[in-house]
Length: 376
Image (cartoon, rainbow, N blue to C red; front, side, top):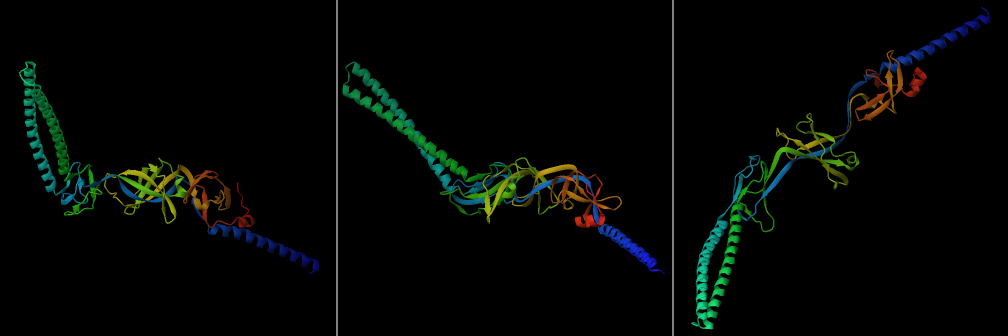
């Protein structure tokens, strides 16, 4: 075989080998790029952008029941957890001292009322004597001195009657105060609710000289208030009226909804962390929510309903990897809307049912060299 023919054969073999190698690299790379790819379909659904916080449940309305008079706490008529009505008797303080004071003032009042009747009679007599002396003086039947004495006696009787009337009013006022203290020895509920705590003990001596001692707390548990502590980084995203829901440790799968009522402007600083208290109320007809329960709170700051969405992890720089019907992977530019840690809203660039790559997507360099993928 001549040298020229050998050269032609070698060139032909080299071309075949190069073509085979190129085909191997091209098709093997393409198949390798799609072999380990995982996808998910673009779907419609809801997206909520949330601000999370930790909160605690409190009664919406409560009252601390205290004692207005000092003395021995004789008996407590209720127990913790008991449902009570308004004006129900809760406790009694030993009334012995207050009853004695009321009796003494009543007796003094009766004595002064009797004295008042006597003073009125003396005033009537003094007035009669003055009129008699006046008539006699006109007829020159008595002296001016006797007339002056009768006049002075009348004025004295009037003054003594006025003084006794003032004393009687003072005694009546003191009696009313002592009767009020006697009534205060019986402590009644000022609202309907539940006894949530009792801090006093039967037999304890109560002293109200400096501060009214608290005996118990009564709360209306039919409506609860949630106090959520929001970080200073998130509080600016909240506004009264925002939708909010929470879960409890006992029922983590049950979401209870409400509306943000208000945010306290003065923060709390805990371990150099600035937190703002945000409050909202929820009904509690079933009574399953109790004071001091921990709540995991979620404020809905943005939301989209029935929109196209893809997993948030599939979007990078406004682009996703899309698997076409042939299995080829292409990079697609999309217009995104709101996003949370789970989903991103797709406003344009994808259709319902499109397959986006969730795992095994090729790098851009590999795609451009091995696949020649396109984007739009």
